[in-house]
Length: 403
Ligand code: HEM
Image (cartoon, rainbow, N blue to C red; front, side, top):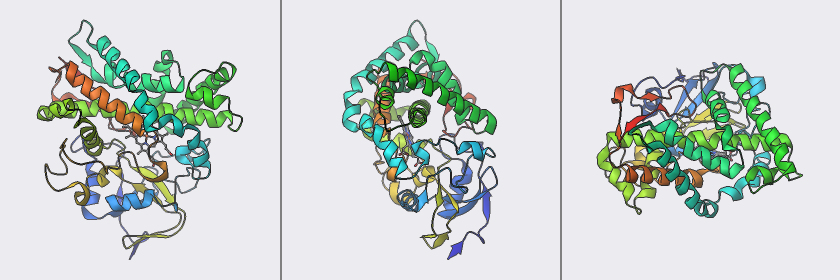
């Protein structure tokens, strides 16, 4: 049996600087090739376990002995410094039950599959209007700024009741928040700016409630303004950058493999194709963090109480034992692969609340884009594409396209 004190460590890369831009950083795949649990060093210098195998990642994410509570002194942080301020006012993403469950329950109903299915006409309308604006009188555009970002951003604003006129503000703040190279001060000031904005909005909603999530939260007497702002923050930031990056990365990748695009036109194949894109791209490259509350034995290794763990969704989603077999190799996109068991949305009690929404947005955005613009092509060579190499959520800075 191995234990933390004897194992060697690898340094977690601060940015995705080498290898295939659509796959996880090589440091992770190399670690996964040698062992399913590896010692690693976080940017701030703390040692953690890098967990790379599918079965092990699932085991950790469904085990309550691994905590998501960012206030735990050994919780792994992706930025160096600022621990005191980072742990203030956590959203339910970074809390354990029963607090996590109490707050998550307030918004579960808004993201149920049935509710999101009923929103499909709105998402389709938003997609069509965004595409009309993008193509109006033009033959070239930046797919990130003109398509991938506005769609999820408009949809989450509609759901939350956040005025879309403020999008430049919250998109700028989200960017700063998600940039790994931002200094802790810059990042935490951005977070506080966003929380202040949401608190003011909540106060307005309390006076004049409308038919939206923030209004429904604002009129409850069992939630503090701080809790409402933290929940709104999580939904606003989590609700647009993730899906936006999936839309732009999927488009860039499909434009490099145009023979697969026709699968999106088949309504029976579309949902499965989107699951494979989610598996293959797994945009939360850094993995999800946990800290062990007790000693836990996992695959012959003991993770000690107080040790941090990074559960690597990206390498778990390339586990040959689960996704290998017929069709293309595991490192390649294969829109006919059965990828339904992927972990791109996490697993266990913190599994992504917004996944029905993300799925609907991805299916509608990608199918509509390639149907309406059959001549869509990259406007720059692959080498000139700019990826978000230093973001907590992997993606693209821009994607110049022509049609
Ligand atoms: C393709 C897009 C998306 C991906 C890949 C994604 C990924 C994830 C992952 C991996 C987690 C789990 C984190 C953990 O276990 O620590 C998560 C949680 C979460 N996501 Fe998403 N997400 C996406 C879209 C969305 C959208 C559209 C929303 C919505 C509004 C959203 C809201 C949330 C929330 C609220 C949580 C916290 C759940 C909890 O702690 O109980 N996500 N997401």
